[in-house]
Image 1 (cartoon, rainbow, N blue to C red):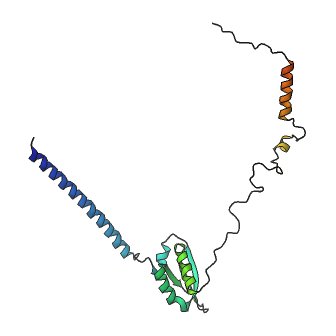
Image 2 (cartoon, rainbow, N blue to C red):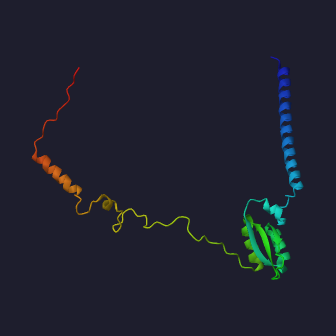
Length: 192
């Protein structure tokens, strides 16, 4: 047995595995750095605070709009940064009532509600659906109700009084079987 040859093979094998792992880690790091640089070049690094409408338009979530007074904008900005809300302000031209719209996405709706509550604004009401998605059943789904009837007897043309009872039919069969003699049951003959 040559021990030195096996040891050399083991060292080379371990060296190759260590190099392979180092190259994989370096490749993963380069991929992450490239993604970070791409996000910075697109200016997507902002996840909280004031942003542009273009940035929010890239988000597939629906928009959420709330109104605040123009005098409260600076306080809203501080609270939005603290709560982690991404938003932008919109002003209607010729609007002299002193209100401005804050546009965000529905992902930030709970945070917006918390901010508005802290600022003393009423929380916006959720729109309730006008019609239920599924109509309620005409009768409650009970299996054994004496008052209800599913109408299958009326459709078949059978009335309750005309229908013979099962017990009566069984008694008739028993009476007929007592009165008759038992006839031998024919058996099948085997034929070859």
